[in-house]
Length: 114
View 1 (tube, rainbow, N blue to C red):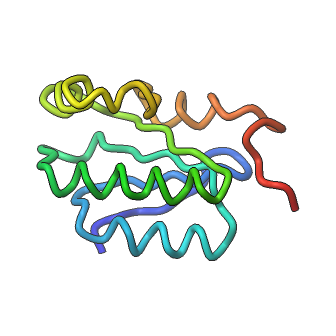
View 2 (cartoon, rainbow, N blue to C red):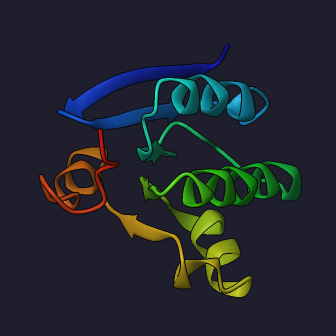
């Protein structure tokens, strides 16, 4: 799998993507663990094609239905253009770094009930 998972802040999972092919599997695991505050660190991606973008939107939908949300980090160049062109930047919040995206989650807001 070309995705690294870590936690930068309690209750916030960070997925560092190198490729998007295994993204849904990684989200399946997070949702099984009831982890619904997720940062996707895209800084390791060199390109984002339509299938990868579709996977991100699908995962956003799944996490939203579970009461959580996704933040994007490390979005540059053409990836930023894709988000803007598709208006996905309206519902996917973008941050410069994974640390900034992680900190954007308040300690009590957007945390699932136990």
